[in-house]
Image 1 (tube, rainbow, N blue to C red):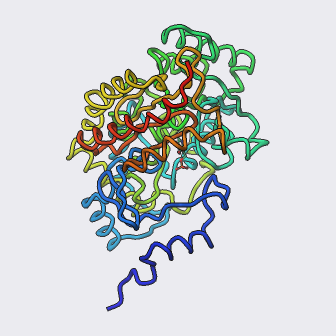
Image 2 (tube, rainbow, N blue to C red):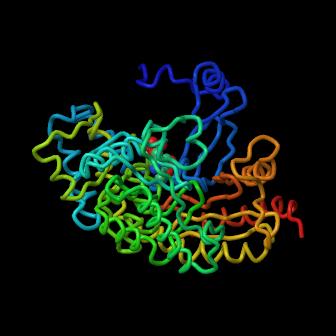
Length: 454
Ligand code: PLP
């Protein structure tokens, strides 16, 4: 009997050749990449066509929070597909209604409504639009050390070099420096001083830009790709207070930090702060089907009660994506996945990375929480010169590439960015798996130590 999957190639060479001939990859010079064909994945591991198995310390793009091929999540998608594969956003749909209820139930404060999107960029794009229309103001403050997505507004808000190719960017975006005690823009010597100075910097910017022009301040609650920068004590509350004082919408981008990554439903829960809008994607359903959204508080929702919200998507609240979110939320609860992530951070990753830092001179700093950690690599601990320069490419990036290759050779897939490696396994990883990955990291860091200069 013919299989519904007939036509999907099963051998490595065909997969690779068709990819090279026809697939155009993100953020890449197409002729300089060699994408590894993946044959299968299970739990915390994926396997290539030669049978090499990798422990995934990247959770793909920090999104596979529930691990690969969770049977209950797969079953929910398959069963709901029998019921409703596609329904337009103009209708009410059971999976969408329940997903919205479940997500708003765990969100802080009065974030009671959800505008569903297909991913993170569309979420930050729509949060930006809502904030502008709600306040009648046109500027948005966004951090230099940030990534908010690749659509026009989202990439304009992005602070990292991925913005450069999209410039001139959308007008009205003002970039600011967030806190980063290890490399303080503010010459601070303590985290408390960093908080105070970073907040004063925001106040100064509001003064010179004009508070009445500023619609929103967007921040990644814990900055993700740009360094796993955990806000120092008091920063989030201070930013919340500034937003309230000046009538500015606080947007927490939790696309990467939310849904268990920080050992909480939302990273803001860690500090008890309630933003006006939260954007999410990735971990909400671990990318089994694309889904994102904006959580909206009552005041902003009320703006669009009698007035049309000028935005929409053919697939806003796609039934299959929402069914997978419902299943994922319930699995998280039933299997204690958030607690697992919190425990792994507190009892295993944090203590083990501290020991690794003691053993390797190239480790300048380790920081993080939950299953969201960065190991920052340096050539010298006193000068803190990064192991590779900011935005390093080609030969400049060689030390990090060699380090990554050493991890892969030993069966662990790392997530590297600039001079850092991030420890971001699935939230479902076991203690044993995490220890296995950290042991590989420990060995591979010999490569980085080789570049250390006293
Ligand atoms: N916001 C943050 C913090 C992210 O990390 C990302 C993706 O990495 C995005 C937004 C964009 O999400 P997407 O790639 O789903 O559009």
